[in-house]
Length: 89
Image 1 (cartoon, rainbow, N blue to C red):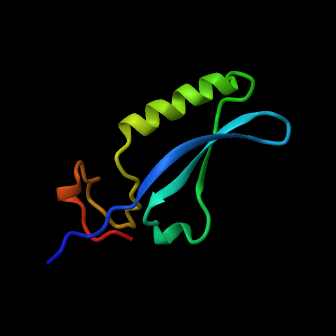
Image 2: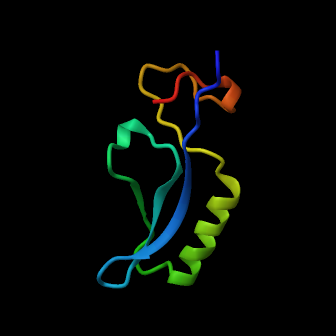
């Protein structure tokens, strides 16, 4: 049995129309079916994060997050590695 493909994402900094930065999680390889045609957006602390700080956060996430996974309930514990993961959704 072949190992399931693990979707990979990158974290990208963008700005709302008022200039407030946010980070989106965009597909680099594969997709999480649960997201459909959409993506995840992370709102940052209002009035506390500059665009440059948001870029630093995105660089940190890109360097340290290897994959994004959705775990449907019920689950007893969150997997700690790709080897412990069940089927990819």
